[in-house]
Image 1 (cartoon, helix red, strand yellow):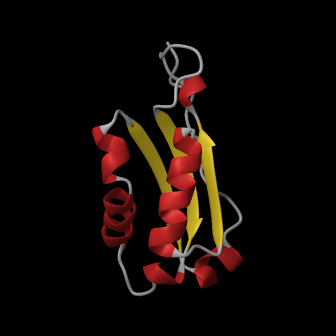
Image 2: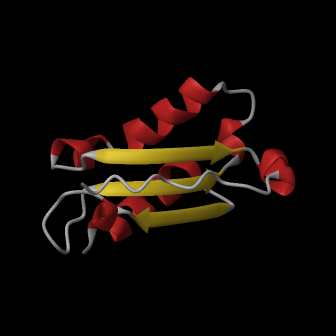
Length: 99
């Protein structure tokens, strides 16, 4: 199973998202071809209601602790409540870091 699939399964199980995008951005970084080390997650969950940004990020990090231990190097997180997602029009674009 790919790291992308594992991230999707674990976040789905832990946070029951109403919207989830897991994007492998490893190709934007200086890593070997076909790497799975850098990801962007766009996630909407009612679990984020009443939580500040750091609490939301902690919840995602806790769900993916094993993946970080296994070599997941970077995770860009964009976390929203369902209400916030209704009005969100612009998810930030990730920078091209490849040198």
